[in-house]
Amino acid sequence: MKNLHLLFLVTCSLSFAQVGINTSKPISKLDVNGEVVLRGSLRVGGTDQVKGNAGQKDQVLVSQGVGNSPTWKYVNVPFMETGQYKLINTYVADDAIGIRTLTTADGVALSNIGEAYTTSWAKIAGLKTSMEIKSDENKITYQLQAGIEANTPTGTTIGDLKFLCGIFKDNSLVALRPDKITTLTVNTPIQYIYTLNYTEENVKKGTYTVEVACRRIEGAGHTFSIGTNTAGSTNSNSFALKSFMKIDLAELVTFKSQ
Image (tube, rainbow, N blue to C red; front, side, top):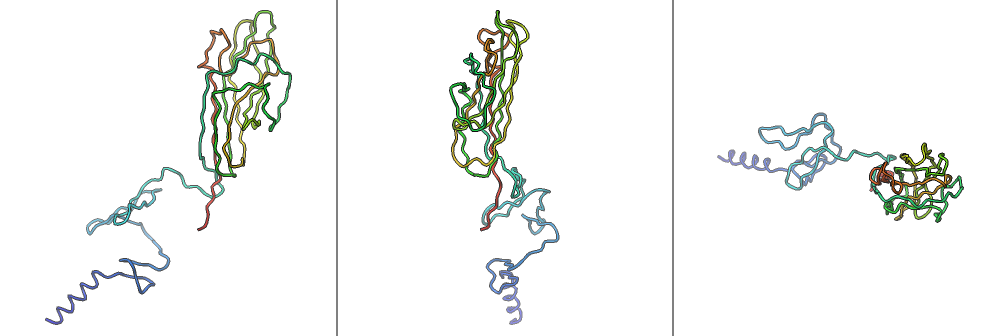
């Protein structure tokens, strides 16, 4: 009878024991002090009758909190490596009012990055956007699209109308592209789609105001509009020619050691 009591006590002790590997004082049911090499699948949520779930390819193990078995889940955001750029924010604006005030050609063929905004430019008010940058290592991609309409009134010879649109950040020019539209028939408006794409790198942290502005270079005798139709035109409308600006802000991925 004494032997049976001793066997019972040993069995009970082992059933509630904590197992330590490379430690004499385990603090959990299994406490491993060192590396763990797993040669097969890792299964979670098992029972006495079921092995548990080994997950699917590309799933990660997600904690469900204390006392709950973790679960396998797909990650919606892709893993990033140091040196890659991650899209942080996208700013989008549109405008259907546009510009009809560029009635005078300034005759200035060139503009340069960094020059200040002047009244020879006209802004597309609805595209004004506030942009916040939180890291000095970044790439900012500007995308602009606007419908253009030009018309040659009676008494004016058909021909080229040259213009330039640019993107200003805090009233400093950061992107630009010149273009032209050629009228074909007197009193018959012609439409065109203008686009501008540019990437700026490593802009200092801060909050900036981004705006779009255009100016007329040549072709003063023609009626001209950007982002809307010309006054009285029945060939198009402000919706078809409205302007859009999209700004993609990406920051460099870095990992810090704790």
